[in-house]
Image 1 (cartoon, rainbow, N blue to C red):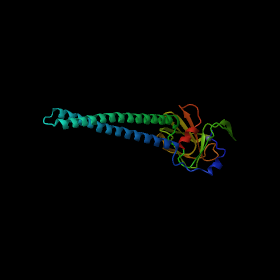
Image 2: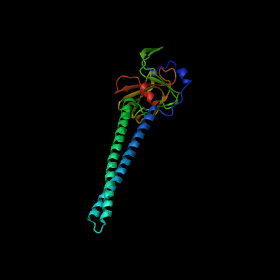
Image 3: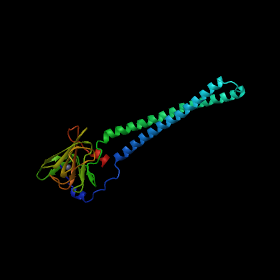
Image 4: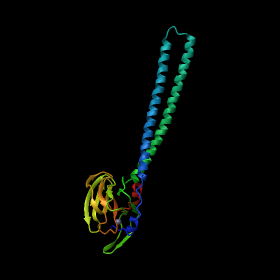
Length: 252
Ligand SMILES: [Zn+2]
């Protein structure tokens, strides 16, 4: 289960928490795309309104002029010619504004679609499970040999952090506590796409329904741990554990 062969070394050189995760950047990008979309649509609507008003005004004036009496025919010929030209120009512009805006909207929607597809694939976790200085060991699948513990495959990543560092729910879900000789105090969070398992806790935080980022416990070194760390497993669709490292990379 949970072992940290070099935990003592790592604990002495904990990296500072990154200010912004990959996820933060992607979510910022998505917000930017959404804001730009809103601006492009609003600008198009405003341009269309103004150009339509120009066309309508030209129409009204032409109609009034055609019925008008006492209008100098020569002057009216000039004026009506100019109005028809303005009307024609406005309609050409309307067409261009629409085409240009549609192209931008289409490109922005496509970009947001790509961002959403990326989020669905990679942003399984919305928060790093350890909220504080930490080091994630990419040690899924290694063979664990410890005295007094059956040889087994390591089913998670060990996230080293100082004792007492908060452990948080990586996504919205239901947090439940358990304990075992190897894991010590454990907490699982069951979310929409599976559950995570944290082991070796010092103590529990909030349990029950939690949101991403809610403190559900504190880093300890219970069970078979040799140094304080959060043993973290990811079980998609409640099945067998898969390597959480690519997903932790996004948020830690
Ligand atoms: Zn472990």
